[in-house]
Image (cartoon, rainbow, N blue to C red; front, side, top):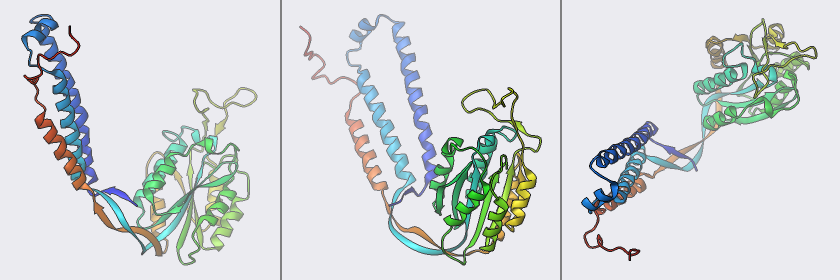
Length: 341
């Protein structure tokens, strides 16, 4: 069952709640300071027997809870109640992302890996009825995200990607291409493409042969080279130091652009180099749009049940309770002191 808000932008109003809380606390502090100017706290309590700070705080808390409930109510929470298979036109895209340690180099800001992940987020934003999956690779490859149309879950999987997912270092691009090819659906008419994002460092297996086999199956292999050809030192995660060789010199990681071009050529795709701009992203998105789109089965919720009445009732009950709580102490119980002698 899918949960969503019909008006999610309304939830931004929740940010005013902390502002109210801060204002309330500041007001109470200032008022307490002003009261102390007239005399000691115990004396002032005797002079104001009807005052009840506890009830004032309770009333404020209830008002904030009612406000939160009203904001959620207006945002219209909904539960998807009916799941249907719908045919929509789209393509299937598998992204093979290099997560070797060299992807931590900072010649692309903030670093190669984070820039690649940001590119993936933007690719997701540009998809429409398309399926996407993610294979991560270093010395070996595995499927991080099976091919799906659930873009929200895709973002969560992408955000969790770090070099720690694979202990074996290296750049097994050929293995990543083979793994990506097995992740596609069995639909033969669907347009399919692989996008490899890598710096090509420590290239090991026969990636060109793997790309050629993919192309023979009708799968286009595109390559995004990320990094500088001049190279950059590779940071050691969690430290301010960089990886060094046995002589103590910094190890520099450079983009292997020639190899990336050969893989793209073998896979009937394109090669583009990523930098700190969005030019590479635009080229890749244009290439995806060129792929012939066929009907794909997409599971969608066609009916939604409104849940806002529940939050409306919660807000109403809280407001009624707040009205019946008086800020001053009740006269009937003012002099009743259970623990005093």
